[in-house]
Amino acid sequence: MIRHGETADNGPASLVIPAAGLGTRMRIVDPAVPKEMLPVGHKPAIQYAVEEGISAGIEKIIIIISRQKEIIRRYFEDKRFAEKMFPRAVGEVERINRQCRVIFRCQGKPLGEADAISYARDIAGGGAVAVIYPDNVYVPAPGALKILKQVYGRYKKDVIALVRTGSDDTAGTGNSGRVDTEPVDGVLFRIKRFHPKGEGRFIPRFKGELRACGIYVSGPYLFEYIEMLRDSVKEKEFTDLPVRSLILTERGTFGHLMPGRVFDIGNPDGYRQCLEYTLMLQKRAGESAGQHL
Image (cartoon, rainbow, N blue to C red; front, side, top):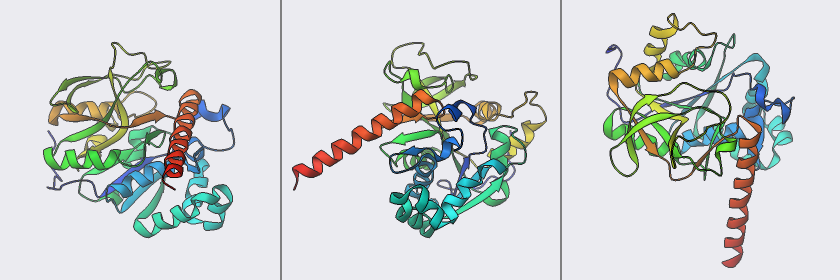
């Protein structure tokens, strides 16, 4: 069990957003724009992840991109560019840059998400770290990471977001995030096993099966586990599954059931469902505002 580098803390001081993946499934939606920059409402999908960090009080947000995704950096650093792409979100981007540091690192080769996360090690410092995959959009936003931060602060164990699957949304959910769980209370669970990613869509094994999402908080040892496992992984891509699984075995991991929904916008069906759901929420908010006038 790794002990070196541990520090006592109540939650993550940094958020890592691995956004260097190829995103081949979403090229059918828009081959010219990476999935992280596809619109969800009036802003790009990746902004939801950044705002999750801010809502949890995180002031250092590290986005890992590839050379082909410089558009993400330009969006956050170039006001005129942001205004051209998402005019209604410009004020929000300005607030983001006042409230936190958005730092970019470039992954040299597409070697997987665990490798991408490792690029943040020298910036993240010695405390706990949050990780959000930007193709996991939590709605109503933000709020998921704030909940996970509170759980980590109480138990000092890794904690990952869980959602309850239903027949209405599995068609738009990739076959990943399958876990075995043990209940602690109504919304908190112990993770017993992370299952490997499969082909096709997520098909529940039983009604209301819980699914883990790409939103989690890990202890300060996360980067050490990545380096320890790097040479032992034989696959072409170094995913975070072996890292999460070893941390689970040696330290334990909690899962927390989210009160909202997490959409997998890494595939066209999930993206469509996310757009439909956010539009419905906007209409409800508009109707509620009209009733109070």
